[in-house]
Image (cartoon, rainbow, N blue to C red; front, top):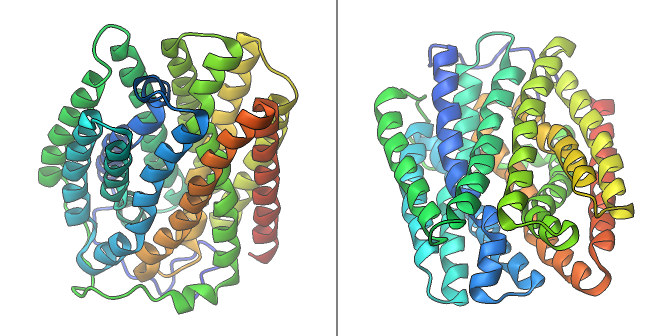
Length: 402
């Protein structure tokens, strides 16, 4: 495998899509629908805590179940994408997400809730390998970082919409109703995507991901290590924003859901802005530099949460700014991942990076919950601050090696 330290396309296989913004939009729409389904578990933390009488740490285990299913299926999904192209995995995955969302809503016990959350994660596993491969092929020349940022807006847009739908519908109907509505949306878009999207061909063979070459790529390894801490910070924030706003600020679940949705709106803005700026700065180095700046800002903001709190206005401002920074950094992070490996390794490389992010997500939410139960939210946000510092230091290493 050949490392690509920059954005040059010499020696790369030519994309088989039309390189149009229409194709980028189709993939972005798919990412939005998929994230709308997956992030129901994060949007419903307050409702699930009440419905099943859970502690904060058990809420964290619920989130971990979803991330665990996602993580375990990532490499098989990456192999499927590299072997048979992204379209089959994305179409089947979106239908499976719709089924899993309904399954979560019907879980009669906490044990079965964990099982259905895990299956939801498995269904979501095609998201990053498939959509990243599609974007790399579809991005118009010179706009790869912007296209990746736009696609990543689908994550924040889906998550934000999920927060509004799940908490908003629960204000006047059974809490499960929002899940059913989201499942319908997923099925409709899966049918549209199957007709509209052409996709790129794979190798025609199902092979074990070639991780040996990736592990020799020092820039890629540093990015994966950074992803571990980015995931810990992002998943802690996603999992406990609603509970923090309810418990510390004292708002209703609907208002708390609105705060989480606001972070996703600004996360979308941050991803578009970061991608555009990275393209202006130039290729992988530009993407890494922008990501480093965003993580540095997130360190300051998480530090503010650790040291103060209680005011709704203060809380909203900090979380909105965190959307621009830590949530807005993932588009350029994935641009870096796909930019330092060959096109034929994108599925496996993305699976490796996403596995690192998810591993952080597996460990951090339960730990955050335990710390909150023992020492309070200030201590919990301190842990997240330290994690973000580690991610920023590793991104600094990446910028020095490019």
